[in-house]
Image (tube, rainbow, N blue to C red; front, side):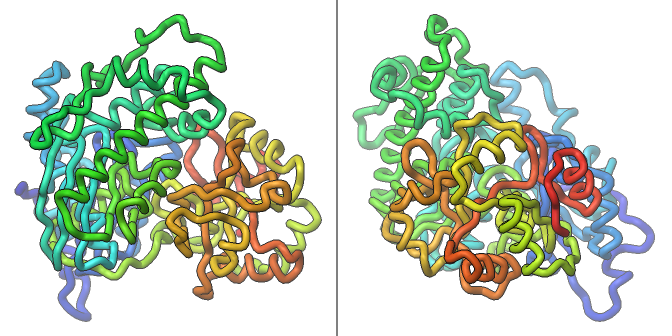
Length: 513
């Protein structure tokens, strides 16, 4: 625990109604920084710093964000940091990255942004596991964390019972599923640690059978010893694998590499889940870590578990929440993912629906911004999913590859009429699984080449987005809208009113706010 000089007037001194503790959870100084704010044990705010700096995957805290929180009287009494810097430094030295202790001096780093009285350091995978478990609503669960790398750990399995978390299994660097997926992302010409989701989309265009055996033989080993590790990697992929099969250069080669990568990942994912079932008797699964964003594979978990929870920001940004919950060691009532900057809007749903009927597409920026990588209706680009050319038009505006699919946001009670949901689930509120569309010819804009969609179900909760979707259904008989993030490729989502106005002017699409 470190201590930093506190200001003369602390946050608690300025609050006179009752004694309360403002705690910030922070994940930063690496990539995709984020801040989560707790008022005592209530999560009241969370955001990625990229939304404020306008720098994609910004690794650092942001002065504008800090000022915004201070203006809301959310000055921290305590900070929970999402990893242990000394252990991280030891791993970096062992990996040949040099002596990084000065770069990992978190007391000095935070002192450049905020006054804080104390810092509590939480293990990287502990932050992931706690962020998932304590927001899940489960009192009993198996927790699986799969990512690139923490301090040393790359894969952990835990059991949650009541408010206790017990670690059952750990795999360490350089054996890493996340590093494998990122290395293959780089191998096909994409940006690692950012564009893995594009590889996942490309996989549907390739032939996995062509390269899956070669990829498995060259990189992955499943030990036969039941008491050993779940898997091992034959190479350290931390620095990539650009030398692998250099003769594969064509676009179809890249698609086939993507397809094989996804297939290998799914084989590994199933092996991990099988091992998790052996270690934990719970039928509830909590899935966390950056690999939990692989929505194509996630639905396979229902072969082994009855229920699954993936916190909407399962990667390192979500560890800003997880670090605090690991420190508090208590469940909270999940408030939903709408936790960021609030745009107070008076625009009517009738105005938005009429515009969509006349123009097929518009932006929407109202209410609190979403925390996590998915737009859920508050910072969204919306379109009629029925038009034959809408997919191409939206991809052109967002400057994305034309093969890229879009998500449908659908009235939750009607989802089974249109999609075969994995595990026959009734909901997918955070776009975390894919489902086969039963009527793909009617909705070409939201169906990928393999016939699947990354579904968002919108519950009957009275939310503004639900009311908008209800009115759209009433006017059109169509219970869904194409919903994608209000950004363009390589840029963060719109955050503030100023961002929304600038986006509308730059790209010529009306943004309602």
